[in-house]
Image (tube, rainbow over all chains, first blue to last red; front, side, top):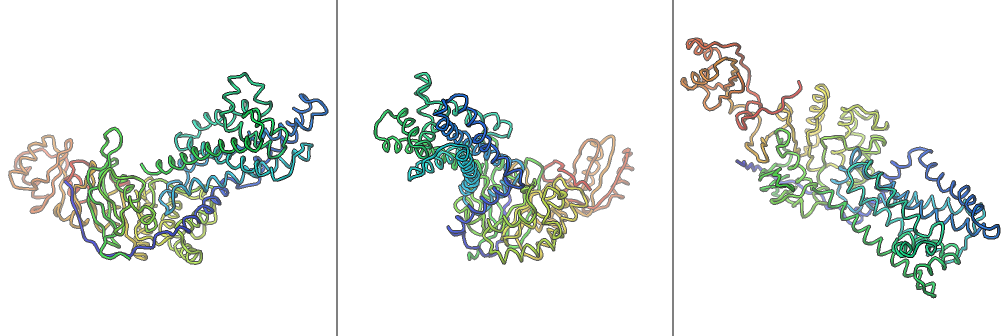
Length: 286
Length: 317
């Protein structure tokens, strides 16, 4: 039996949230995530320590071991930029853990009933992840430059910035998808290396992809990280970037190759990040 | 401004989950502005799913949920802007301070900063947490955290607040404390409250009307006083070896039909026209051995028993 009770009276309705109010939610959510992530000096020191370690210790050590004295600085630069291909995925993927913690112990349900678009929640978290990643990259490049790595400063820097931004968004999108799909931090941690670390060894990070077996090199060309790294190198060093792009595309026009790699990266990013936002929004309503 | 609309309406709400799980099977109700409306029922009755459909976190399989005349499914942002939720479990950023949690709510609900500061100061003072809102929520007791969540729900001056089992897991003293907090805030703000609970005393104390939910449907909806009046003046509980004979005697004398329930060796009867002493006298005349007998005032538990034939969770006190 269903009972219907109807003693209605009038109530007033507050105005709907305006678009600007919705947009303002993103800085609020970004600040929330940053406040949760960076609560004490240690939580800022740890993300900075990794690039410092790579720039000041590991890259020079590898260069001393592998490269000739003449090519030492070139190889150190090569390794330092390869580190960017590790830092971005790791930092973005670890940011995804925050989504699971929010869902299990934090204010996620409060956010889901707030008068904001669900996509704002994803974008707010993304911007926080981008901010920490940017800090890591600045520390990496500055520290490695002080240690002897040589970077070209020109408008080519824009290739680096565009590739780094797209790659970071792509990796955060992956993190968001996994965080939405996986129920626990333990499961998430189990999958994280497959996404964030395994591609590092096949994407032309420590050696060119032409050094890989033919079939593996073919696979590497499909990895977003391969394109991102080639663009990092093209943007900051010129020469090794041209070679990396040529190893992927086999063309002679550098701008076309760089544009194609950026397009590949952009397509990956659009598909993954859009999927992440949709999946999150769908998961927010059962 | 929309006039003529109830604050909250559920129109034949149905929710079926994958695997043919019928959580809600067609719920209808309308709640007027300023009313406190309770959804009372055991775990798994469909109360929380119903609340979810009203606050846009659960999409109905069919039917409509409306807040202030707006369809929740079609205008989730508009309806979320005029409502807030206090969830069953703590939903807070524990490493942050109470103030940070509250200010986050203010910003997300688009409350002007000056207005927000005033409301925050007033409400935290009213519920007695003004002194601790600059401490991390991690350090709060369960009751303090609950108070903070209630303040948070009211900060945006919502038309409707959903309280989803707001006192579950709290000890008796804190529960009673929170009753007062909720009642005080309701009196001050005139907010419409939709509350789910499986505590009968809670529903009786805080709600103007109660819908008893069982297996995904509302089996009855009325005010607590009407529910209690429908039970009678007194409830008799008799423990006897031969419960069938007790029932026979009661029925033969026209006492309490159809409100006689037998659970184990106990017969529970709502008495309308006679009192417990008279019934015991009748049983003695029939030589029925009564192991124990008690009379008490009717409670919502009796209402629930009559409506569903089941006993719901009794309050811990």
